[in-house]
Image (tube, rainbow, N blue to C red; front, top):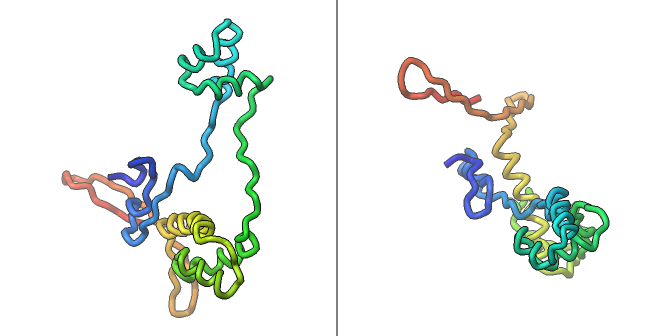
Length: 178
């Protein structure tokens, strides 16, 4: 299995990219998707101008009738924009959460307990869990691609890992990691 394979709508999985200690899936559901592109919007408008009904347009395009009506109400195409997030009870703790999450291995349960006990948080566990998820994914992705090395004199170096397969005279490819 390659690291960029899509399985059940989750891609790529961090545990398949090369480090068996990271077990954080990266979900495609966390990203924005184009709802109706300009070309499809133009197509709906052309079909309506040709005299087709909303139901006929919906059948041919695969859109719901309400989606077709929404397209027809607009004078010009505009990309989908997500509404601005409403500030949650967790917003005042966001900086602390980002710093502390790495220290407790991104455990939403521990962070929730500390927020409740030490910081006066009145919100629910689900809010904390949803706030920790992108932090965990970001850390897992960073851990898969970088390694920091310190020598005895505390000098630092960073290594970015990669893999190259080269065929020599034998049939077996040699693997050289950098």
